[in-house]
Amino acid sequence: VSRDAGDRLERQLAFVVELDELKRVLRRSYIRRGERLENSAEHSWHVALMAIVLAEHADRPLDLARLVAMLLVHDVVEIDAGDVFVYDGPGRAGKLEAERRAADRLFGLLPADQAREIRALWEEFEAQETAEARFARALDRLMPLIHNYRAEGRTWRENGVAAAQVFAVNEPQISQGSATLWQRARRLIEDAIAKGWLPA
Amino acid sequence: VSRDAGDRLERQLAFVVELDELKRVLRRSYIRRGERLENSAEHSWHVALMAIVLAEHADRPLDLARLVAMLLVHDVVEIDAGDVFVYDGPGRAGKLEAERRAADRLFGLLPADQAREIRALWEEFEAQETAEARFARALDRLMPLIHNYRAEGRTWRENGVAAAQVFAVNEPQISQGSATLWQRARRLIEDAIAKGWLPA
Image 1: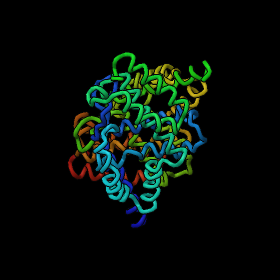
Image 2 (image 1 turned 120 degrees about the vertical axis):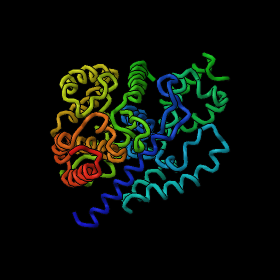
Image 3 (image 1 turned 120 degrees about the horizontal axis):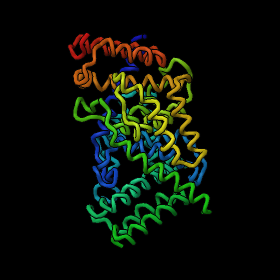
Image 4 (image 1 turned 180 degrees about the vertical axis):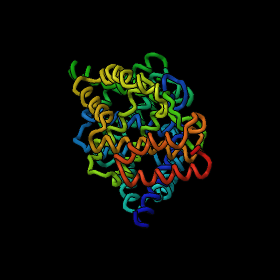
C-alpha cells in the first residue's frame, strides 16, 4: 500500500470510528412500546430498511440505492448538532446553521471526493427537491408516528403535542412523498385521537 | 386502495414494526470505548454506512446497492435467534437451525415476493459465495476489531479470548473480502498484542 492509499484508508476509518458517536444521540421516540428512547443510529437503520420494503409506495420512480444511502447519512450531522424535536419551533430555527458546521467537520474527515459525495446526499435530503429526498422525508416522518402509536401517544403527551400540530408537521411531508402512506398515516393519527392518546 | 393493496401494505408495516425488536439484541462489542454494549440494530447501520465508505477496497467488483441491503438485513434473524458471539464454538453449532426458523417467521411477515427477496439476501450472506457476501462478512468482522481496539481489548478480556483465536476467526473471513482491509486489521491486532490488550 502506497503512502497516499494508506492515508486515504486512515481517513475513511477515522470517519467510520466517528460514526460510533451517533449511538449516543437520543431522539424523542420510544422503542418497543415505551421501553427506552431511541437513538439516531438505530433509527437510521430502521428507516433505511423500511425504505427497501416500502419503496413501491413512492409517488414517483426513484433510485433505491440513493434513497437508502441518503437515509443512512441523513442524521450523521446530529453527532455535533444533536437531534431537534420535530415539534420544537424555536429549536429548529438554529438547526440549519449548526448542521452545516457539523457537516463541514464530520464529512471533512473523509477523503475529499467522498466528503463531497456523502455531503451531497445529506444536502439533497435537506433540499427536498428530488423524489428520493421526498420519499426519505416521508419515511422519516412516518416512523415516529408508528412508534408513538405503539407507545400509546407517550411522546405527544410528554411534549404537550396536539393533533393540529401532528397534522401540520406530517401531512405536507408525508403526502409529498407518498399519497398511499399519507392515507395510512392519517388513519393512524385519527385512531390515536379516537383512543384518547392525542388531544384533538 | 383496493383490499389486496391494503393488505400488502399492512404486511409490510407488520414487518417494519417487528424490526424494532432488533434494538434489544445486545452484542459483545462496546460502543464509545466501553460505554455500553452495542445492539444489533445500530451495528447494522454502522456496518452498512461503513460499506459505502470502504467499498473501493473490495478485492472483486461488487454491486453496492446489494451489499448495503445485505448488511441492513444480515442480523434481522437475531430478533428470534439472538446474537451468538463469534468466539463461542458450541453456541455456533445450533446457530444455523435457529436462524432458519427465525427467517421463516420474520421474513414470512412480508408479502410473499418480498419475503423471497429479503430472505435471499440473508441466505446469500450466509452462503459466502458472492463478492458482496464476502465483503459484507469482512466488514462485519472488521468492525468489532475496531470497537475492541478502542475499548482496549475489553471484549477479549471479558471473554477470555487470545490472539490465536482472533487470527483464526478474522484472517480467513476478512482476507477473503479484502486483502487491503486484512492487512490493516492484522496491524491493529498486532498493535493490541503489543499494548497488552490481547494475550499472545
